[in-house]
Length: 124
Image 1 (tube, rainbow, N blue to C red):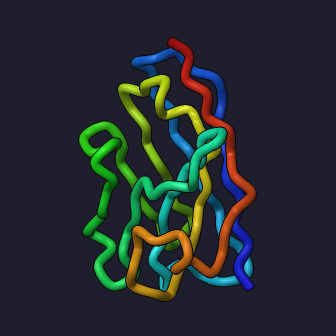
Image 2: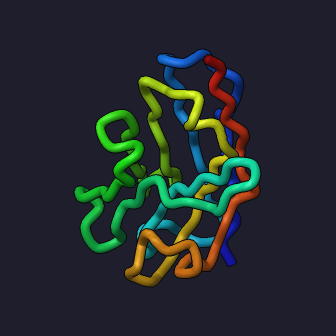
Image 3: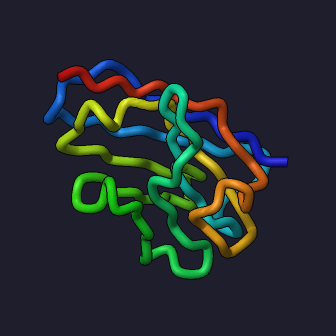
């Protein structure tokens, strides 16, 4: 089993920045592709970004965050990060970290392990 714990979410003004962290325990993340998803009130959980286990230099982003968010991973620290810049009110959501041994990285159903989430609120 892998446990994931997110942190770093808070209230921030539009145009500001935040860095989210996700620390894994129980298993090493080096064998897993890792992702961030988010869920706004009344909406489905949506894909944000993912890094591949087999090509950690490559990161895939949702169009809504491309150019503003940067995902990274540190396998030695068993941690993934999400740097969020130029935040917009529509980025307000609970952000979840997830891990998969599968390959369909933009699909929430592909992920075996999830964190409890961290709340990000962007005020206008």
